[in-house]
Length: 215
Image (cartoon, rainbow, N blue to C red; front, side):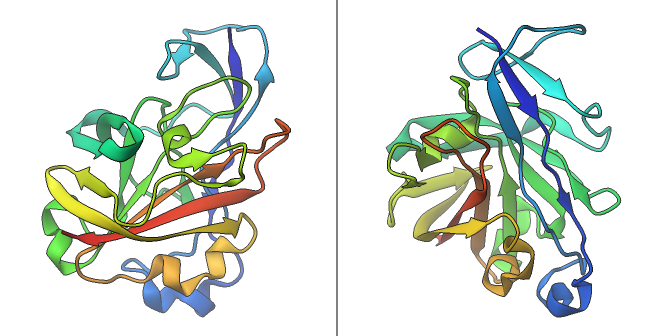
């Protein structure tokens, strides 16, 4: 089985002045995390695998050299059976592009590093997949119900820092850039964002945002 993945990036838009004050580096993100197409044949290049070992065909540019696929630590949400490597990436030219489908990624130049969690918000992005693919973000969403799967009060660990989920929400991809609550840089806070996939298998139009505070 091969799942085809079409990258949907975060990019700074024309509303920079509206939200720059709530971001540590003054950037506005207008889209988040990738989309996938139904199964298709793998064509060219080495396969990129999902968590189930299925190949994912990536449409679009190669992953950014600013991204580290793993090696930073672990991201774990035991209540939904998620425990994956924690990579890191940077916003480059106002674009955030998670490079793989088996790790979560801390965003280096938004908020603060996991080691500095007491002083600001740690932002984490991860892919969810459709067409039968299994990315880390799939554990956080209930596709059939069209809502977040992880519950308020659930534990999340990011590079050995423990959090408790305080709320979850669904935000349209066209609206997330202007959501000041998402991008607030608050001591002890974690924000995890992934795509909310659709039961009909069509392209995702919304993001799930999981917010948590240090336990």
